Structures are given as C-alpha cells and as structure tokens.
Length: 147
Image (cartoon, rainbow, N blue to C red):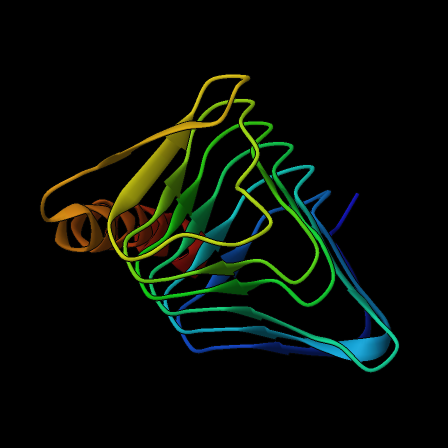
C-alpha cells in the first residue's frame, strides 16, 4: 500500500517518501525539504497550530517518529525507531540513534543522541556526512524510480 499524506503536507523536490510512511497534518502543517528520504513506517505528525519541518537532505529511517511542531535542520538523521518529541528543535547535522529519543530541549548542530538514557556527543562534520549519504541513496534510487 502507498504512503499516507493527510492534510497540509508539502514535499520538496527530489525527496522520496517510501510506501507505508505516514505524514499526518491534523490541523497544522508538515514541510519536508528537498532531497530527503522518508522510509517505511515513519510517522511525521502535526497538530492544530503547529508546523513540523524537516530540512533538506534529511533521512528518517524505518519506524522513526517526528512529533508535532518538531524542527529538523539540514542533514539530520533519525535512525530506526528514533523519536523526535513535540516541539523539539534539532539543528543541522544532528543524529538520533537507533531507538533513542532526542531531548525535548533540542540539540545544537552536529550532535548525536544515542542509547536509552539519551547520552550525547558531538560528531565532527556530521551534517556533511549525512548530506553525502542521503545524496548517494537518492542517486541510487533515481534509476529505479524512472522505470
């Protein structure tokens, strides 16, 4: 079955939304930047009066959840079962590790949050590395999409 795009949802050029992803803007808006990858079973939510924003070159892996009003900067990665809570602001190059939750207060640029206790560390050049990885994945997908 296809992806669900409900309500005020905008998807930027070159972005790929996989089947079974759910983008549900319930009275708010969802804005996906250019050249993003949103994998299967990802949930991106927005509620009344909120804007949930995903920056350019972001990658959301299987079962990731982005709650209403969250903001992801350019080149962010949310790994499998990672969660970005309501109103959280992740600046450019942040990574939410497998099964981890970003802190509600958000993260400054190029910070990785990992583990069930939400440990963090700075990762040099994380934004550039994430952008490069998303670009490679998109380039590999384009020939398949053209068929």
